[in-house]
Image (cartoon, rainbow, N blue to C red):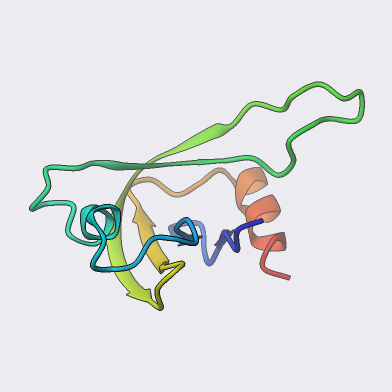
Length: 98
């Protein structure tokens, strides 16, 4: 649904909701989180269900810092993770870019 993927173990490409622009309240909160006293956390999962139909939980990749953004509606944001993502999570998240 969204074009979210790992660029490297430390960088993550993430897209906002389709209605979010850089000048919207939500967009401003993402792009200037320090001024809004916001902390951004990234959660990810490769699929919503496992092979038996059970819901797959999200994995918390932790807190991120803003690096750059492009576009609007949606905004494509590059985030830098405070800690590199685990190798298995990176492999799955990087595959999403293919």
